[in-house]
Length: 279
Image (cartoon, rainbow, N blue to C red; front, side, top):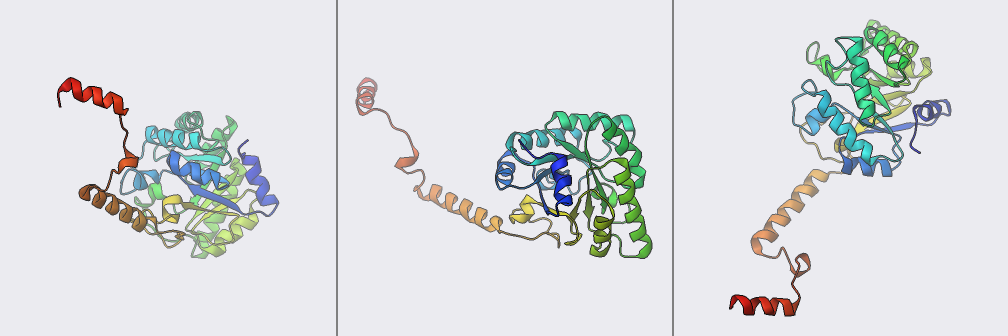
């Protein structure tokens, strides 16, 4: 039986740190799940990592459902949370509920959406129909390019108070956890100590109840963006390119395929074939 939202909430109560990984495909999600990761997040960052977009704004519901379905087939142990993409929930509560339902039907256990106090009514409505919601405050990639750009949040007293108020409002609305993205570590710690639900940090310091990284960042596979908060545990890009170069060289030199890489006819059948075609 895979983890539930209640298991994640209990981890905070028990003082256990929560590990989360953003993953988008069956192969890597299988490995993440096997490793014992607590939460698999199907993020709309798939638009950049998997589809090559410049940001998350072009990502569609159909694409998020496809990625969610792939990851859901892979997971056996982790909680699965999927992002609601840009404009799939902002226009109306009806849209938010309908599209949340689509992600649940695609295999998610919960959905994640960006926004603070302005999204509390929408979150309450989604929760009221029985769909768990992870909140997301601080840097909000879906709209940051439309406003102030990528920068750390909560570095002044006034912005810190706003973030704390946002977090409390989301808790009141019924979220089971909140992602804190690029928030100053002091404010992230205050939020984590103030609210009862777990916080999952994205570049917001060690005071959060858990942490999330994109698996391609962790493995050193995504070269386009190298966020400061992403720790690389491997540098697979170099290893993969080297392996592909070796393959190319083997093909060109004729050392691949070798005999163990192909299939052969029975000797007698091959002899009959030669006799029939006269060669």
